[in-house]
Length: 177
Image 1 (tube, rainbow, N blue to C red):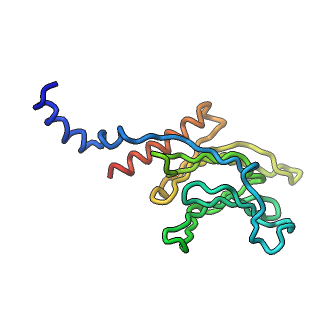
Image 2 (cartoon, one colour):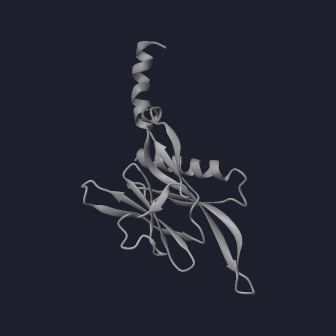
Image 3 (tube, rainbow, N blue to C red):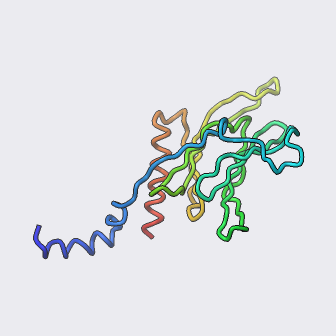
């Protein structure tokens, strides 16, 4: 390739975002919500049944699990800056049990989305709930809150890869605006 040809292609690469996209490294990090969550030490009575659990932070995100009578709810809060600013990133995701794995989608080591498995329930004729499905929720973090997708694990045998692709594709579309 000649010098003149290279000079011709540089504006095209920059305009299409291909130059910037080549420097992006997508990866995943996992939080084990069963093992990584402990009783909040600031709770008035840590032995009370509804004391929230605080999970290991990832980046500027604080993960907690709160309890209702029949559900556990996963909460995600972005911490600062400024340091005194806390902002709810995502309304609680509630299920009979949320303590499993939380996948963080990362680009160049910074989280931009989460992927979380949520079960679907239906009340049967006896008044009990039966699990009737399961979805992978794909939710965008700060700056990417418009990302709100779901992948049906019963219909897609590659649901995990599909969820990651949805998150990564959204990031690429958003960063090329």
